[in-house]
Image 1 (tube, rainbow, N blue to C red):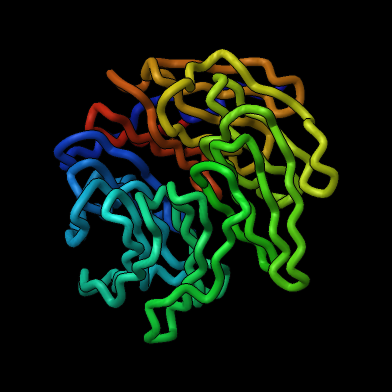
Image 2 (image 1 turned 180 degrees about the vertical axis):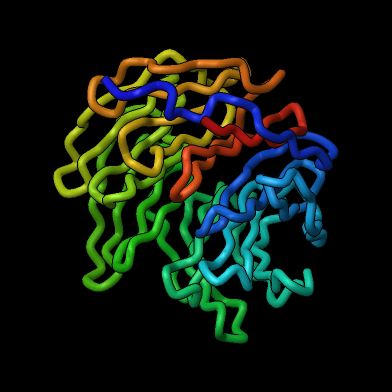
Length: 300
């Protein structure tokens, strides 16, 4: 049994500024900053450890659903209800490019490892890849084998992995053009990778998180206790891969033991739905975001 005292359940800071629900909060790659986005059509950059708001990015015409920043912190990408993918310069706050092509709302975005390509996941049942270095606004690849909204996307060096409301987690090997589909039988809301890249954690709309073996597709474990029936909620593994973390529609945050799936800790974090959790890359620290309009910073 792992040490529960190491889990971040003490409120260290509350980040206020969003007018309306916060849909995502994400640490940057070194964990010194975090980005958030939400219903108020803005993206905000914070120093979560000092509780300081640094910058606001405004250009989206509808709610902003997801945001991702490059490893060197120089560019960010965002998406949302206005069907567009925005590619920003972090320092100036200017939009460098708008990628148009999705037929409906865009649910998720990620940079590849080299920050040269952005992949977006849409309500229009497609994944689209965009070249950040090209001046073309056309996608370089469209994957449309899904039969319902694509909610979440992860990238490895050679693969695009996505989760869909059609109940599948699909892995596309970009080099050889192969698709592998794992059907979970429940709408998939969120996927995240383990730090060792061996597993995928999939949050499903039957209030269950499922851990899949990446190489075989085998279902390794299921995590329950939280409520996830109608909202897109994030889930993630802690930076040691020893625990699973996730939000709940009743305002709670849950920590499970990775191996035996026992609930190690649950606490009331927000006054409404916890939409997002993001774990610090090295420290026992986490940020959470909520429909209540706040982002909270948790430490052990």
